[in-house]
Every structure is written in structure tokens, then in C-alpha cells.
Length: 166
Image (cartoon, rainbow, N blue to C red; front, side, top):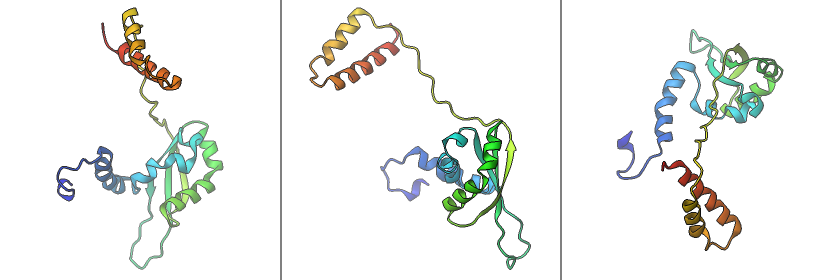
């Protein structure tokens, strides 16, 4: 991978991770990482938070002359999302096929299991600022004329100072 890019140009880690994970996901689950990353756009925010594509099961072809048969998309979901997903099966099949660019999916199989979704990072608890820190912070941003910018920078400064230990 390093030999493909000119020396000295930074490469985003996400690009490197995609290059590594995409072939593995294709081999193990029969789908691309793009489908997993775009799942919220395909399924919609309501279903995407409670479901995820597991794999695409492609039918076996005994000979090269055998006609193409669409695959089965296995979707993991939890609880009541299975019922919602079942009602929107046709629409999801159409959206996945549009995403892939051809009629790859013919059916959806729903598997009920816990779906872990990243809840985001928890906000760290901030300590209250001392009087000297408040005075220094207001003096630093006091010369800024725009009220909105001054308030934003003051909140930023309070967050930075509140994270530091005394």
C-alpha cells in the first residue's frame, strides 16, 4: 500500500482501513464495506439504529452457464425492528439493489439478535473554573467584537480549562 502513493503525502487512516477491511468483508460476508457504511441511508435512521446487514448469501452456481440468481441479504435486528423491517422488505431490497447497481438481492432473511450501535463518546465531567481562571478567560476573549464568536470561544476555553487538573 505504501508503494502506491507518492512519498510524503499523508493518507487518511480511514482509506487504509477500508482497503484492508473491504477484501476481508467481501470474502467472509459477500458484501462490500460501502453497504455497511451506507446502511443508514439505505434503511433509514429509524431502522438503521436497530439493524445492520450481516452478509449476502450468494447461490451456488454449478457451471458458468447457469443463469444468474439473486442473493439473500441477511439482516440482524433486534426486537420490534424485525416487524418494521419485514413490512419494508420490498423497499429495502429496491434500495440495496439501487446502491449495488444491479438486481443482486432477491430476498431478505431477518435474524433477531442484539445489535450493538456506537452510542458516541461520553462527555467528560468538567471541574468548575476558579475565579482567577474566569477572569483570565474573559480577558482573553473580551476584545472580540462579535457576540456569538465571543460566547463560543468562551465556552471552548471553559471546556479546555475545566478538563485540566488543578
